[in-house]
Image (cartoon, rainbow, N blue to C red; front, side, top):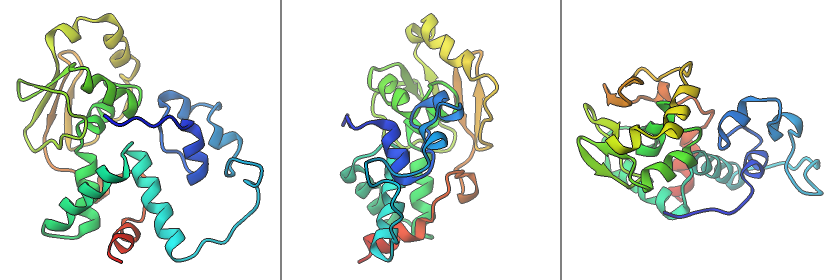
Length: 208
C-alpha cells in the first residue's frame, strides 16, 4: 500500500476545498480550510489565473487526493472506466465510490479513508466471507462487507463505529451497525457523488 508523507491538511488548502482527509477535524472549526482559505506557502495569498491544462490538472489532483490514490492507481481506474460502456467520467466516479476503503469510510466504520485503508490492509474485513486486504478492491452489487470476528471484538474498533452512529449512509448501501455489516444494494450513480468535481475535465486531460 503506497503512503504519502505530505501534510494532509495542506492538500485540502492547495485544492481550496475540503477533501475530508482528517475525519471529524474536517467538520470542526479547527479545519485549516475554514481558517485559511488560501493556498499554503508564502505566496499562497496571491491570486493566480488558471486556464486550460491547469484547470484540468487541478480537477484530477482533487479527485485523486479525495480518494487517496497514487497517479498510477488513478490511471488504472481511468483506463478501466474508459473501457466500459457509457460516459467515461461517470464510470470513473462510480468505480472510485465502490473502492473498498471508500465503502468502509462511508459506512462509518473508520474516521477517514486513510484509516479505512489501514484497517483493510491489516486484514480486519471480509468481503463475501473471504478475507479482504486490498483497499482498492471494487465491490459489486449484493457484496457483503463485514468486520472479521476477532476484529469485531476489539473495543477500539467498536468505539469508532459508535462515534459515527448519526452518519448519513448513501442509499446504495445498507449498514447494520449492530452486526458490523455492509451490503451493497445497488451501484452508485453520479448523483451519489457529493464531492464538487467536474469529471469531464479529468477525461479531457487524459484524452490529450
